[in-house]
Amino acid sequence: MLSLLAVLYNPGDDLSLAAALRSPLFSLSDETLFRLRRRTDQNEPAPAPIPFLQALVTPPPTDQPDQVAHTCSVLSDLLDLAGRVDVWRLLYHAIERTGYLAALALAEQAEKSEGRRVGNVQKFLAMARDRGGANIAEFLLRVQDLQTAEAREGQVEGRRPESGAVQLMSIHAAKGLEFPVVAVADLGRGSGRGGAPSRIYHDPAFGLVCQVRDEQGDWEESVGLRWARWMGGQMETAEAHRLLYVACTRAADLLLLSGQLGNASSWLHEILQAWEIDSGSDGEDEESLLSFEDCQVRLVRPFYAQPAEPEEIAAAGIYPGLDMVPPLANPLLVTESPAQIAVTRLARTLARDPDELPVVYPAVRPQPGDGSGRRVPGYLLGNLVHQILADWDCLHWSHPQLLDHIRRTARMVGILDLEGIHAATDRAIGMVRVLHRSRLYQEIGRAQARIVEAPFTLDTPLGTLHGVIDLLYQDDTGQWHLVDWKTEWVQKTTVENAARDHLPQLAVYARAAEQLLGNRPAVDLCFLAANAVTYPIRAEELDDTWSRLQEGHGE
Image 1: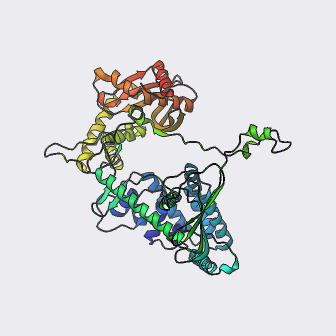
Image 2: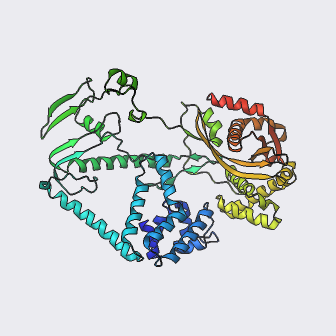
């Protein structure tokens, strides 16, 4: 929020604008920011970095065109309001237009956090309402003064131990300070940063290494990426040890270390190993004194009793007059989060051998030889055709308009070189032409209702399945139909066998559509590259496949 205010005060502050654009306010990806900064609206390399505000008005092709247009509209409105309304109204308008609080709430729900970030934003808004006027510069200076005063107060308090205050500080804030008594808590948690591994690293020896996609569009890891990821892990471990050293050396007289055992990657586990202290317990409170060359360590192992069952507590009469323990008084059970599985990867997930070694891919793909022509990866062609069919009305456009639309969409899905765009456009327009001549196209055109690209999630014993249904339409009799487009090439004589390979995916789609619509749709599989052959899937096949999926296997 402060970065956004800095931009509204100084629209030329590209650093603050970049921070705001990649935050949950606008959620633009790093790739989109790079293209805005370094590509022209004609998708040519820019001779010099383009200011973000200018790039948002005339953006290059990106994979987030709607978000870019929305961002440009929001910033334009906010710049018009800046200086004319109070700061808190400006911030409130930004939050309303961007859905910032909802984005933070969803992120915290996914991380199972306590809603601290949403609370901080609401507190910041309250401060802006109470202390801010219409002058953004004065408000930013006031916030900076508060931050400076807070930092100074922390340092002064640390030098006055005689006041008897207990001060809570982060390890970074405690650098350079010393206290008579220091307690370092929660040492039993993991010392790593956590989160999903990055898809791009900078290695001092090899430069930039990144994850790439194979011809099916799935992520694959090169040897260089694995090496850089290992090196990054080593550096994180070294940084964690350095932080532990800083925390422990803040104590002048007494250092208290506390934590719960059980995590082999925790600081507590490493400390016990370094001192060669047994982490076991005999089932009761233990206390011992260990002597080293320069210090003594008093080791206390409290006994953790397992919580009693509600029936046992009631039977023991611990709470007179209480026949049962209220549900909210029971300890919270730790439940494992269900696996998140993309439906398009379902068959591969079910067929995977748990003992199978990971495949190591080459760091650099071999380039095609001279005269071999440009071959567009199948997943990019599939993405292009699906994007075109999702915009169903464009199929009625004139041939030149449709061609231009397909070429622009090709850039959006990641086909950037001219030869690849022409090759993908030729194949996509060929599939659209055969679809035009099909009975299915005529029936969809007469449909009472159409739903394209319908997202869903579905809870199953395998985990939470998520995906997108290509098309749902309701015919003139009221019957709903589900259509799944396939762009891979198959022979007409092998369509039935090819359709069976997609039965697990279609069974999930049918179940999700039934949940969405309230009744079972008819399911059709359309192979566009095989002259738009439509293969109807029988309901009995879908039910049988779904039953096998419920049991945890797909064969």
